[in-house]
Image (cartoon, rainbow, N blue to C red):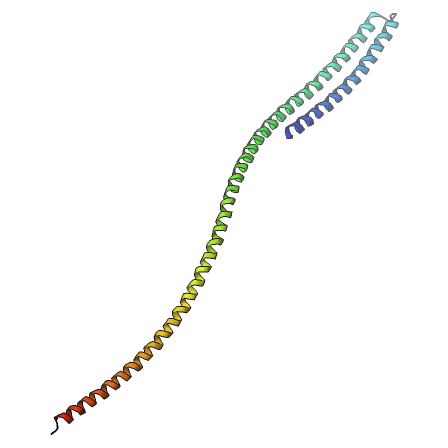
Amino acid sequence: MVIAAIACAWAWQLQEQLKQASNTMNDYELRIGDLEARLSDTDEGMSQNAAVQAAKIRDLDTEVRKLWDNVWKQSKERLGKLEASSKTYNKKIAANEKSLKATQTRVSSAADDLAKLKNVSGDLSRLISSAKANQAEVERVADTLNRINLDLAKINRQVKSNEEGIRATDAFRRQVNGSINELEGAIRALQSAP
């Protein structure tokens, strides 16, 4: 599109310059027509001497040459400018084509990257789903651990309570054993007494 726009602008500029050249040519044609009219007047006055007519012809010839030289000079300058601008536009068009190709390559690369990102996005979605499932599992395990800790605390309280009961039982057993030992000692003492 850019190349077409540049080409249209260039064609429009060439058309404008061609119109200007055409207008200039029309002006020159009018001047040449005027000169030809003078020549026809000269024909009517054939009675004038040949030297005057030759001088007029030389003047007319000089004027015509000046006009054609001027037209050629201006046309040559315009043609040179047009050729220079044509080369410039051709270079710009070539640069734009290269830039367009580079942009197309980058767009293609971006499309490939986008496809890869879509694949990665799918993988991330699956990972997020898996992470949510794992989080639920971790919460379930944490709840189980909390119950186990509560049960363990209950068991520890029962063990402490049992230890106290065992200590009390041991103390009672020692007391009973002490009492039994005293009774046995008393019985032996009674048995050994005459």
